[in-house]
Length: 140
Image (cartoon, rainbow, N blue to C red):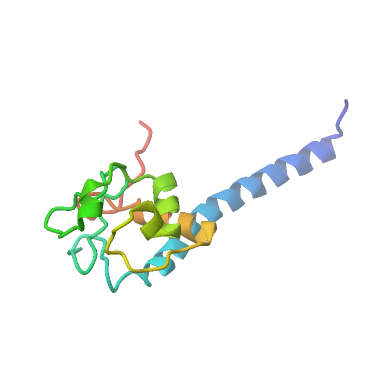
């Protein structure tokens, strides 16, 4: 198949625009997740000055075993849960917390919208255990 230079040029431009749109979408996911998290602030905190409230602070959630934030009074159900937080586990949990952990103290009905759940996870996972946003590693 033979392509004209004009068509190849147009394909390159389309590829660049597509790449930029993906990059922008990722940034929007975190921003949308931050907006979603504003609904969680009554019970949870995140960031450098995060403290346990009605719910545990959420710093360093990615890769942390469920029910293990120091100083938080978890229910027996949360203490006994065997999973480690990941995007997949969080998405399942946030849809219906009481179904994922029967006996949890969590009283919200859940976030059913998958995009909102992914955006919320994108916001949460950026904070390390110390509450600092994780910075992408730069290539040498």
